Image 1 (cartoon, rainbow, N blue to C red):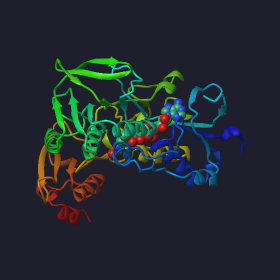
Image 2: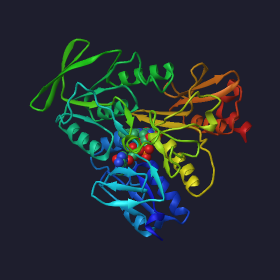
Image 3: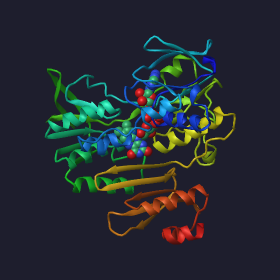
Image 4: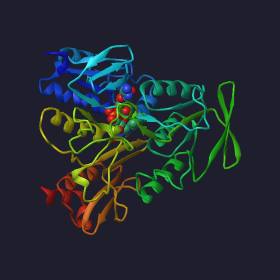
Length: 409
Ligand code: FAD
């Protein structure tokens, strides 16, 4: 096997690890290099804001152990980022100084946490939760803090707030938009999430402006909320993430809120693919519903795009058309979403066994497009099956998962 046959995967997150698994299953492990800027073996990211943060004994959940990479001859480069792609010579340069030739390159660089310009980086009591080392740091900071201020009412901010509350901290969560999860869930679900967190003792404030970050001796000591000064013990920023496209842009690949890929996940250079959170993609499945490109940040999208990319690398044209789904755990709430929420849908609420359990079904005309569930895993699984099969039972039927499932079978 010549080195020039190499398939180099850049980024050892969910998508990168899954591409390696697919290539190993196809018998190509010996051609694969996985280049990771993080020092850890590829690990599951979702627990970082949940179980890992809550329990100091909790370890990282590796996708595959070191022995697996060795057994399948996948070459791992840990703590060694790719610093440049040289398309003319089909090589990548690594931070360590190594230069690796490739036949095919897969960018799986994910996202990086957004920072706020008013908050200097490197403060001893301000943090984001994106990587294992971030989460480890926040775990330590939580142990020595009584109060936590979370900036941002998206999924990660809410998960961190709920976890901190479970740890007995007093928690304030500040969101600038008029409601929580404004980009991702329906107003009804956002309202339920707001009330549940407030009922659990989190001081959630929406439609507020945080500013005037006051720093002293490398610590954030206070901020203002709508003009009122509030002291800060620990600040966790959950203000979103940006696609990590620096390498791709520097290499002249088309990028627009992500690395632009076709339905088989090829970038504007057919020798280079991109997968996961960093991609801006066209989905055949949603072409009817979504005008323009999508960029999703979810484990489902990372895993399913990795499968499509593996097929492309193996010479098969299998356009990406997986159903989007997502979950989030926030204290006592397990939120699950299947499908893409339409802007103009009609919503039907399906009550569950308690007021803490229900689903919201989104229809456009007679077509079921999306189901949001709270503590209703059976509804979620039924919804996924129905949506994947393109079935749209009438709301009355779909509101009964057992009957809906029977009609599906
Ligand atoms: P990532 O997992 O972000 O991996 C990208 C990797 O590329 C990183 O390790 C990065 O260091 C590396 N990299 C970047 N540039 C380079 C370079 N130049 N050289 C080498 N390596 C590089 N999703 C859900 O569906 N449900 C959840 O409950 C959920 N919870 C989450 C909780 C947290 C705290 C976070 C941060 C995310 C969560 N997500 C959740 C989102 C999910 O983890 C991501 O969608 C998923 O990790 C995306 O996988 P990825 O491989 O595209 O990117």
